[in-house]
Amino acid sequence: MKKTKLAFICQNQLTSFIEPIVQQFEKFEDYQVRRYYIETQQDIIGAIKWADRVFIEWANDVAVFATQVYELKKKGVIIRLHSYESLTHMPQQIDWTMVDYLVFVAPHIQKIVEAKIPDLQDRVMPKVIYNGIDIDRIALNTDFNPHNIAYVCNINHKKEPALALQIMAELVKINPDYRLHVAGTFQDERYEIYMKYIAKEMGIEDNIIYYGFVNDMDEFWNGKGILLSTSIYEGHPFNIMEGAAHGLKPVIHNFMGAREMYPKCWLFNTVNEAIERIQYQPSDPKPYQYSRGYRQYIIDQGWTLENMVAQLKVLVDKLGGKK
Image (cartoon, rainbow, N blue to C red; front, side):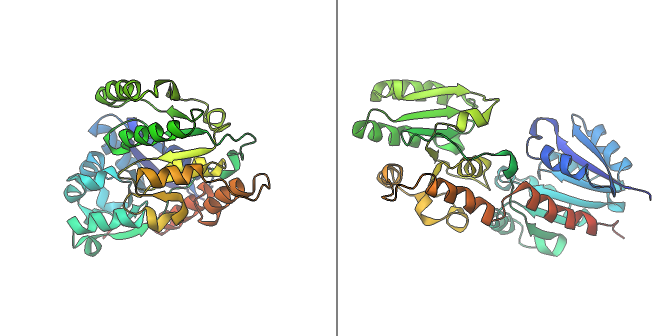
């Protein structure tokens, strides 16, 4: 049986989310899969010419160019849009008549894009498919410390790190054992200068631990008790899923869309509310009862790699060339 040629196209620097999906599609016998982690426009053209079906990761300038390639109209096409693209003009520049399905990772991102492109659904079929994690590779923590707070993200304006420091300054007044463990790189030197300066001014310099980029996240998660997210804008973030899957208590700033995805008890609006969430200790002493509940929530929502890939494969199987 002749296999269908499926090309995954993604900008070379943005492949971390798509690579696990590609690996799963490589297991399907009905597809011949190729990665095109592109550097040039010629790479995009080559991928489109080779493929029967095309999956484009990110609705960015790669997708803009791809939909200008004449041969694409003969293919089946999916574009997946995460979050940052919704705040740019790139979705408006994509020729959506060349695309079969536009996959959003969360409903609120779809709403933002459709507010800017009111006739989007006349041109392309939108689908919401949440991100998923490989839950079988994530073990529940065996060691929890409620004073060790995990803060997992690359530091930039979207993550609102100043809010994390405000929360820490108040927590340390209550108990000096609190530590903020920061896994991620500084994407803006201004934040590195500010965070290290203001932490010293606040007297919490020794309570903030920077790890930079972490290769072994399983080791990092162990021994932590809280997952803190102070982002002001997200799609469907992996750090929250992974922290909860390890059994950490999620404490999440109430960004747009968060209320539709997470339990109310995971969210906070103010510094005081964050402190209440972090300090709260359930009276029931059964070990792991609550940590297992955080993990189970991720599973119950279907936010697993297996479920995400199954939904994507349904779309890929439906693809055909446009007439």
